Amino acid sequence: MHFPAELTKDACRARPRVLRLICVYFSTAYFFQNANSLVLNNYVLGARLSQGHVSNLNEPISISFQHNQSLEGYTVTCVFWKEGASKHYWGVWSPEGCRTEQLSPSRVLCRCNHLSYFAVLMQLSQAPVPRELLVPLIYISLVGCSISIVSSLLTILLHFQARKQGDSMTRIHMNLHASVLLLNVAFLLSPLPATPSVPGSACTAVAAILHFALLSCLTWTAIEGFNLYLLLGRVYNIYIRRYLLKLCAVGWGVPALLVLLLVVESSAYGPCTIPVSGSQENGTGFQNMSMCWVQNRWVHSILVMGYGGLTSLFNLVVLAWALRVLQRLRARDRVLNPRACRDSVTVLGLTVLLGTTWALAFFSFDVFLLPQLFLFTTFNSLYGFFLFLWFCSQRCHSEAETETEMEGFSSSQTML
Image (tube, rainbow, N blue to C red):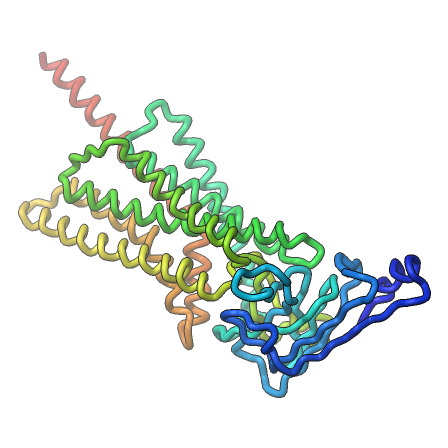
């Protein structure tokens, strides 16, 4: 452990005769039991100043942890013991104010701006992202999300600019655009507060907003699939009292409730590290990237992967059912029905582009990892742009139908 000189300045001014720095080493994590945590080597290092509580240091404290085996395949996070932050234990592990640097495959350096009990949490993860591939993935995300933000804003502005605001289906599309817009903005902002110099509450807030936006986006894709099922199943005759209000309560209310429960009950959000292999920093070692996201692996498994899996599965079922219905409609008529053809485009444009691209997240293993990363990053970063193209195509179809009806009306008037 390396302590900066700043640690003794204020203390010496207050009580220049007595200053004790107490360092404690634990070779077991028995006294720091916390659910879903695996402590590196069961090592816990504590440091306290007899003067009192020390926090918000300008120059961080450096704590080096050495492991006798390689840490590849694990996500490591520097944490400290936050007392009184749990109802079931006398504290919880928290990464607030700490930065993780992996100097080698077996050595981790923690830089924290306060004194406490420190450890390194290990979490089994997928293979680290190679440094040479991380840079293009970052550029794809930045460019794709920026294009999606502009596209979503343009779509919403065109919708409000139109004289006719459209039916409930169009308004459902606008809610989906709003959720995609919020998701892209929150995603681009998520790495900024994930630094020790920024208060942990800011990172928690950004992570909670990002999680809410993702859940809302997934929910609205499922609502799109449900609405499509009603359109085809009820033969375009839908009347449900306060239909849009009920959908908004589900699309926005359910994700908000889930996120609020997580914020109140536990510290599920905060800075998370992204394992990067072969990333050199000043020629000395490895450096992981951080972003504000879900920390608890059970929350990530249930309310991210599980939630996304259910919505994607639901949309796939709706897509298969809708294609079967349209195939029956085409089979009844020997001549291709233009209406059925347009509905096929609608199904593919809405359900495939909106729902099934999220299913790529479930192929992030072994040989599928790198192709999945590029496909998932490309398609989902351009998510709003695909929605914009679909919106434009639907608007062109609507205007073409209006012109055709007006020409038919004019012809009938001329004949009369």
